Length: 425
Figure 1 (spheres, rainbow, N blue to C red):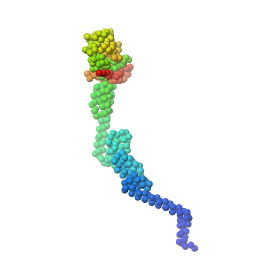
Figure 2: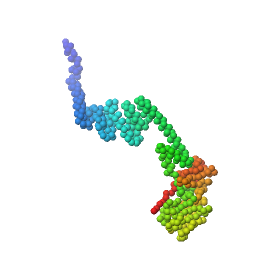
Figure 3: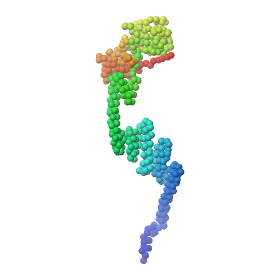
Figure 4: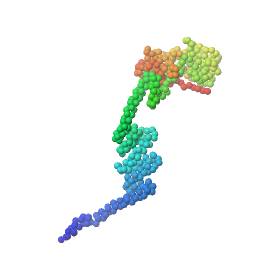
């Protein structure tokens, strides 16, 4: 009969069930685990040794080989702290955050350092859309890490008022929260006021009241959009005395004023020829008659080869020569009734030499004291810009188009405004 001890040994599966092969397998598994533990221990020791020696790159590699990713991330953070260049530091913090296990202390530290550095870099210059998005993401990371004051500053930098208010409330920053809400309310009010101003500027421009629109835009110097509108209005204003336009389908280059001068410079009509004096000749009206007179020019004004010494009346038309070289043809205009047509240097001008009647009801052009050209109408002959009835006196802009009735056919178009003077020494 077997003893109790023998029965106990017989009950041990390691001795009787698996046999020698399974015993060797169990021993192999144990040796593998022990080997890995040994390698990790020895790798960690090597990593610490490299770290102490200042070889941070080698230490990171050894920690990774040893399976200690959080230790590797910790050394990456050290590399970032030691880097003099902020962009390089940011790269190390980003790599550390991606390497460390979620929720670990190195992960939190790397995320906080990365977020704070992202916000600091963004604060140094203008924010692009992409950089603003990065700052808001940094603020979210700081908020998640419990860095509420830094999160509030990052949200403010990124323009996320809701996020800033949320973290201020969470952090108990009641005074700052009240100031933020007060400032936001003021900005909203200013925004509504600015929108109202811009809408009024648009309405004034459309109605032809450009001087008022310009004054309103100039009255908002701290509004970049209003300043930009003022610049555009000034750039489009039509300045006399020479204006290009199309009237009743006919292109007209009008030379406005009670008199029109010809010359190489400082004249109504500029002629780029050295044969002309700066102030060469002038056209004017005496009662119902047009006339031309030479202004004492160096080379004179000739009629059939003879210089004219006194003013010359223009009845049906006359051909002259300026300075003995430049042909000039003058005759009554068919484009604008009661005006004089002046053809010189390849361009044909129409000079009313008085009130510039356009032949459209009572419409007429005038040059204001500041040189801006204006369209005058009255209640018997109104002007419309599309569906809008314009003011009786419209300061003209390039591109203006007017009709005699609401939504009607355009009869007057302002093309390019004043012609650029041609100067030649």
